[in-house]
Length: 214
Image 1 (cartoon, rainbow, N blue to C red):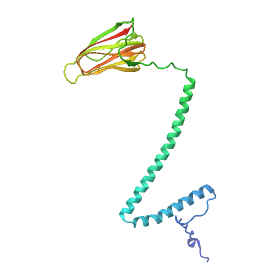
Image 2 (image 1 turned 135 degrees about the vertical axis):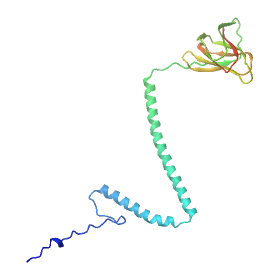
Image 3 (image 1 turned 90 degrees about the vertical axis):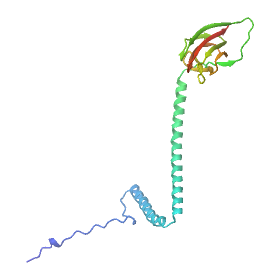
Image 4 (image 1 turned 180 degrees about the vertical axis):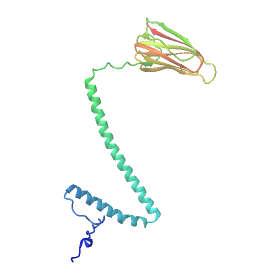
């Protein structure tokens, strides 16, 4: 009687891949190139680890420090590249917006000056305010030469008063007063326009006026 050979049939064992030995081509040049790079990297790492662990501590520390410096340099170069690209994009966008927007008038200039003396003109008070804390005044319109006068009565040492000059559109133009000294004083300004003042006081009484040279 014939003996069955079914139980004697065995599948040939599939050989396990060796990461240190090049494997058969997959038929794709890109995949094969990547696989070769990975294999070389693994082989280099396999050789580097025993060598690195056999080095003295100070040499291992030096290698780690150099590696960190190289890594930081690469990150900085990459960030600089992205920054240049972003800056170029912002510059292009800004130039496009500037070309599309209508030309805006020149910014108004307000500068301090010594007390002016112009024959035939006198100082005329236009506005007067008083208080004991912070305040934003009403708008006022002045000519080419005008002044801000204040009288400050601080309650004690450490108190102060500040008076800021704003244009009618809310732009900060200059500072008329910044003092902790009590008593009267003035500042003189060259620049016509419509303005308002903001008072910042930490305490005490104050009086404030604007005079126009007309």
